[in-house]
Length: 307
Image (cartoon, rainbow, N blue to C red; front, top):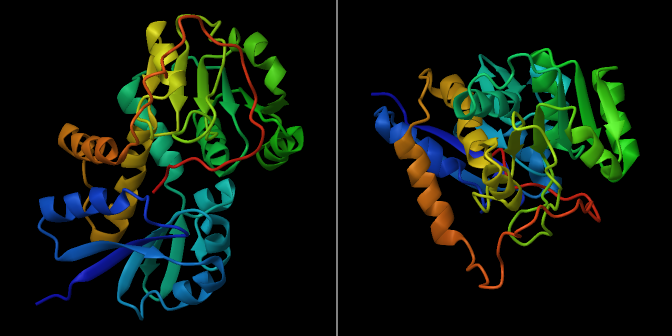
């Protein structure tokens, strides 16, 4: 009789994570004797927790904020984790604790499923933000041979850091350049927390071709103001929940040797959980009748994604 396997998501905090809901659904679906847990671990305790991961009964784990970069230094990362500069999935290969970054697969897999053919003939894209999510997105876009990726950030130095990391196909840009550049790109991706519950809205003038695809990594709320505005214009969109679901697939495969599927039933389960925990929306909030003008962020914030 085999021993029960344990996996967890490690973060500080970890309470917001929907990863247990996703993975325990697949565990039950495939009849695996396992359990996926949440482990809130403070930054100063994180190295010791990872060092004792196997001793505490875990066969692997997901890593979420603020530990992704530190996890890279405590494991043997693959080329993808090295390229992105962060690890969000750990597993044991013999006695070696390996790591990867599944945000890239989550981003690309979600777009492939939600907007088939999005990368066909795509020459240029725009990424809002320059944090960890942006790095995974830029890495994925370059893998799909996108020739120009505009990285827009309030602090231009952070956008320039992505150019140094990924090369000359990355073009740093200021927030006041967005409207002018939109006519030249085929994909717009928001990796900031603007539009997230409790954060300022992302106000952007979608003066763009009808072929533009719009993706938002925020999944709370499920339909952000950006996605609502894009859909009102008839643009194709991909939401943050899809990325969350697709990024979970590879980790499950590494831990249990089974490749799970992202199904409508699983998505409905997570949607219901998000709806049940969402704060009441004030009656005064409404989608503006006219596309609002761009307003840049006042600071860098994390987006609720990836685990």
